[in-house]
Image (cartoon, rainbow, N blue to C red; front, top):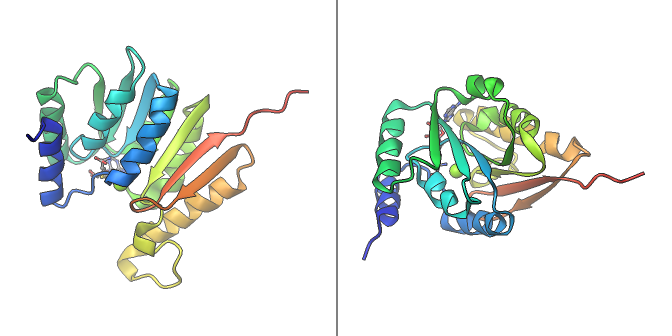
Length: 199
Ligand code: SAH
Ligand code: MG
């Protein structure tokens, strides 16, 4: 029998909504299972599928804030979240993440970056500012079907590729963070602060 969650996934795939891929979800779920985050921030809700999946791994009383700017997707995400009675765990913040992130102040245990690729450097900067000391940043679609690392890109992919390359460069140059790039789905990075050396 198909669960409500399966139905949401099926419909999103039929409508070509870029929801998280199964192997990517598995990697993230394993990390969440180990860490049991209390507060998750997601950038890019779409129809709520990934947030719904992540909500299973929250610590007792934990919540997810998830940002989306597309009105139709917000409407559908709300309906999906309601149908699973998860409104008490998942809070949609409506609007452009670039603007919304600037206003957020409370820290998160995990940030999932999964929206406009050209904005990944901006999202990263805000994610670092909003991350607890032992928090984790995940970013999806880092390899962008191989375009990120290949020499040639079509014009329409250029902004995205530039954003993704800059994102990887910023992480590489950031001595506070340790980053793993994993070849699951469309490419996933997992970044953690390095333990501070005690004097
Ligand atoms: N995380 C979802 C998939 C997100 S798809 C899942 O795995 O189920 C990316 C979403 O980000 C799209 O719905 C798009 O509308 C949204 N988005 C892209 N750029 C954005 C921005 N600057 N602010 C808010 N939402 C954005
Ligand atoms: Mg994605």
